[in-house]
Image (cartoon, rainbow, N blue to C red):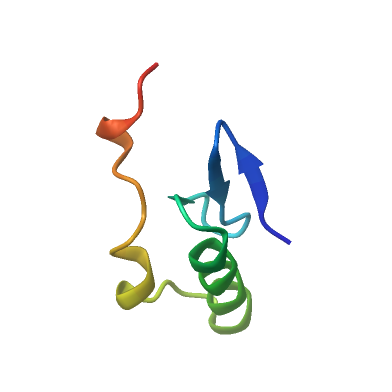
Length: 53
């Protein structure tokens, strides 16, 4: 189950953040099953430079 962090959704397997919960869940499911990341999913991740500290 994805976790919401500061308005974004976290893949708890690889720690990438997404604006849409659906993408975070797809990422988490893929990571857990394949033990790898899928570039077609991860290309939608939020660029960490876009986050304000």
